[in-house]
Every structure is written in C-alpha cells, then in structure tokens.
Length: 426
Length: 193
Ligand SMILES: Cc1ncc(COP(=O)(O)O)c(C=O)c1O
Image (cartoon, rainbow over all chains, first blue to last red; front, top):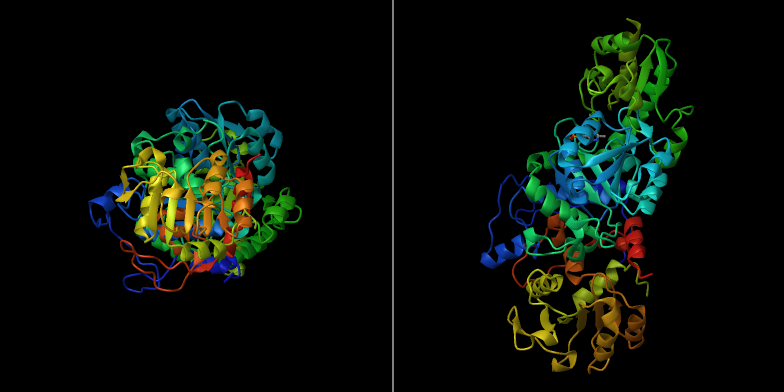
C-alpha cells in the first residue's frame, strides 16, 4: 500500500483533518472550550508529564488548532507546527527557545516594520541583541556572526518592497555558524516558496495575511523543519538540558526531530501564553483550503498591476520581482517560479505628498495596515507603518518617502487598474 | 534495506504484526523517554516486558523487570533497544540466541549500529534504527496530531475514539513514507560520522 504522494492542493484541503470521531462532522468542528476532562488521575498525570497524546487546556493545545498546525506543517514540509495568537507572538516564542539574556541573533535589515521594532526595542529589554545584515550582501551575514550568535532571521519575500531573499546562500552561512535559519514566509506562503526545501530550519508565519487570506483573523504559526541537531553543543539549554519545569525531561532527546515545536508549545506557549482562539484557527483553516487558487489570482493580478504602473507617467519606479527587468527577477525565477507574490511597492515622482494624495483618492483599494487580504490594500509606509524609523532607516528598509505599498487582492484586475489610473490622473 | 528513510508500509507492517515487545533499558523513572514509550505501547495493547538488570525485583506499570532477554522464558516478537549506539551489539547477539527468534530489532531514536543491523537482517529479522515506536505508532494512527505533529498521512474515514488498551488503525494513506527533503536532511545529519 504505497500511496501516491498528494499534491499541494490536496494537502491544502485534507492535511490534518479527519471526520470528527464523535459526530462524523466533515468540516473541522470549532472546539470552543477552555479545557478537556481527564479520564482519571493517571491520565491527567500522563498528559501533564507529556507522556500521553491528548488535550488539557486550550492555552497549550486545542483540537481545532491542531488541525491547522498539522496542515501548515504538511504544506511547508516540516515535522510539526505550533499555532499562536499572532505572527509577532510566533517570533517571540521561537526566539525564547533559542536565546538567553546576552545572546545575539542576526536579522535581515529588510523586514516588516513591526518586526524591526520588535527586535530593536521589545527584545532589547529581554537582553536579546539583534545584529542587522543586508540580504543583498551575503557577506554582511558572515561578518555579523559571533560566538554569541544563536539564530539568523530573514523574510523569504520581504515586506514592504517584495524583494526576494537568497535563502540558500544565507542557509549556508547559518550552517557554517552552527545556528538555525528562521524564515518568515508570510508574504510567499508555502504555495510560492517552501523555505525548508532551501535549507531553513524553522519557518514562521503571520497567518493573518495570505494563509488566512480574508482579513478576518489574527494568527501566527511556527513550523519545525526537523533538520537542526540541538544536541550538538550546549548552546540551546531549552532543548538539550533537563527542564526543571518538567521534572528533568530533555526535550531534544524525548521528541527527536519535532523537539523544537514541542519546546515552543510546552516551554513557550504554556508559560508566555499567546494562544490562538479556536474560532480564529477555524477561519484560517477554511482560508487555507483555497490558498492555491487565491495565490494564483493574487500573483496574476499583481503582475498586471505592476506592468500598468511601470508604464504610467506619474510613477518613478516599480519594485516587483515578477517584472523581467526587476533587480530581484533572477531570484524570483529561482525561488518563486509560480509568481512573485502580491505585495510590492512603487515610487511616485511627486514624492511624500503624492503618496499621501494617492491613498486618499483610491476608491476600491482600502487604506489600511495589512497585507494578504482578498481585497486590494494600499498604504504609504513613510507616514504609517514605518513612521517610527528615521529617514535613513526608512530608505534601508524599502520605505522611502515617495514609496507606496500595494497588496493586490483577487478582484478583477481591470477594476484595480482603472482605480489606480483615476487616482494617479486626478 | 535503506535505514536512512523507512517506508511507512515497512513500519506499519511491524507495528501491526508484533504483539509482545521486550524493552531493553526500560527505566522506572517517569521522565525518561523509555518510560514514556513503555507506558504508551502498553496502553495501545502491546504485551510489554521491561528488561533491565538494575531493577530486577521491581515492577514497571505492573510488569516485572527481567535481567536479560534469556530470562523472559517465552517467545517475544520485538526487541526495543533503549541503549546508546555503542551498547547495541551485545543486545543483538543475545537476541539472536533466543528460540524462537524475535521478528524485529528496533533501536531507539538516536541509536544506530549498522553492523548489528546487518547481523540481525542476515538471520531474517527486520530492523528499524533511530526511530521511536511510540512516535511512529502515534504518527501512523494520527493520534500524535493532537500535538501539531505532521503525521504525513491522510484519511477521509471517521476517526475512532481512543480508549485504554485499544489498538488503533495504522492504515491511513501515507504521503510518500516521510521522504521529504527535510526528513532526509535530518536523517543524514544524525548519521554517525
Ligand atoms: C512579514 C510579516 N511578518 C510578521 C508580521 C506580524 O504578524 P501579526 O500582525 O500577525 O503579528 C507581519 C504583519 O504585517 C508581516 O507582514
């Protein structure tokens, strides 16, 4: 009974889900409950001691959420996953397993503005120090490695400019440094890029974006590739030392190639507490069923809009890796042959004021701070998401004053082009 | 036999076929991985026998410890070895002296000895290395999915409600036996060098 290997779209619909044992319900039920009864005292002790599989309390795990976790793990080609309350929570939980106060991690300078803030300010108060590197200069990652480095963090397709990162080259730096590579795959989704196939050890997502896809739920997820050997040295005490909070269990030795996901659950989520609601897990799970169809349409529309903008007289430049003459087109063809995503930026000849004005004149595009919705979205990063950065940092992270970011939805592309045309001409 | 990446069918055949498992190196300490696996496999209906000369005279979940495989005093289907790679060969040699011979030698997560595996295979036994039977049983039955683990299986059939001592169906359809790029890389990395 060697079965054929199902394709991506089949996994997007089926992985992790099974008709409900009690009722036969075919859609995944929403287990909207805080807690689960134990069979007896021994069962309870087994569950708390991590000796048995099963549910205790929704802060630690939930059957609806578990389906979401297995589905994303399957789509990414990982060994296990852990869903949490937001993309930002996923980042905190991951780094809490890897860094002790005084340790360092290297992060690509081109990141979602919120991540730049989180790494620079919030993490500083935990004693986790970030060293920035330039994803367009692989040598800058090598030069940033020190004996205190514990991880490297990059985005596959970087927010806001939609630039493509050379994952394999940076994975090689991580391998030589003996640290895991963490890839935020939010803007690509596993439909466009599977970072684990290119050497990532951990993948994180904001599920809030394309995976959920409908702009209705905040969520995040951590995928363990199962590739990193945590036992090699004592750099990672959360994984390889006896854990006093579990009577001396060593997570790595007990859980093998999904130990990282378990550490995130039983040491991170359990103690920090950012659990996703089962209802959000259900909505995101439903969104994932149409991920392949939506991503095809998102990418097709984005390319058409980018082509239209690059021919417009009010536009100074378009940064879309799907355009043949774009700086990142070669990397896009290697890493994302099905499409370069649907988030990109363009510059207006009229500068900061023209950016503010365009946003106010659009009728179909919504002005808001999100990406990856069915609806098309627009934002002027310099006056919003990236406004806390100084001018030099704005330029470095792809959010110069004249830059406008679009997240292209799945409407009819002709309508999107017409809306942009009227707003640019008015 | 490729010991880097096992077909799900191979593992499924073993776990469906064996009834009694002697666990060499079983520990009565309830935070040791061997204790976890012993308890789970007993709950799933296997006849478990703890083997550890350091604990003779004690019980592990109601089962008396024996000092050596030769003390079991009856046929046993599978030997699950909870020892480091360097302690595998004497256990396999002892197993190969049993009559009737066991059907399977299983070495735990992290343990691998290709020479010992070769001897057992030459005697007609099946061998699994560097895997945990609890994890594999949980994965193939999808019971492990409660923890967000990728079972790498699919099923459109109604799931059973697991109860104490119940054997679960392991016959879900497999997604290519786990030969993902990631699991291959993991297997390669854990090879002794
Ligand atoms: C690439 C990327 N990573 C992480 C996040 C943070 O996710 P969340 O808002 O779900 O916390 C975002 C949100 O915009 C993002 O775009």
